[in-house]
Amino acid sequence: MKINTAEFIISNSDASKCPKDFLPEYAFIGRSNVGKSSLINMITNHKNLAKTSGRPGKTQLINHFKINNNWFLVDLPGYGYAKVSKKTKSIFQQFITDYFENREQLVCAFVLIDIRHEAQKIDIEFMSYMGESEIPFCIIFTKADKISKVKIDSHIAAYKKQMYANNWAEMPHYFVTSSTESIGKEELLTYIDEVNQEVFKSNSGFLDSI
Image (cartoon, rainbow, N blue to C red; front, side, top):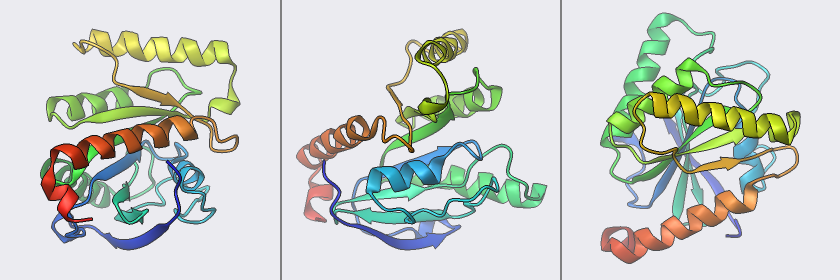
């Protein structure tokens, strides 16, 4: 897939106020400071589409970007280290939960994980929530340029072990990426393109809205 247009549409904290367009959506979420904004900018060929910051927790709203006028990339607030009040964090959790459990247009979520670290409890717990809620998702391992191929393989193996220990039958589909070196970009966009084709082929509601 070649991205020709990427347009910011709306930010809000209420899932019911998300765009009414019945287009397939791909939501990006991960622990704070996982490199989500950099990844979004890399795959869309825009330096500043998503706001990057050295301060974790920069994204605090549901952000919709329309890509090629036929699908939405959704940038969601990070979970974990964000330096916000407990009240704000509980609001995050509520509208993120509302989005995932009620958004009909969502066809796949991408859970971002920093490949430099071994399996983190918070990531395992979040993916368990996604699995239990039957929300389709893939894993995107970020910052692959920061460690060796041996460590990458070792850390992915550790995640597989943790997930099997948490009653997963198999590891979700995953991608290994680097925003600085554009690693994984083509694989990720090809996957989205293939899913879009299946969605448009099998669901006339999506097709009619293009």
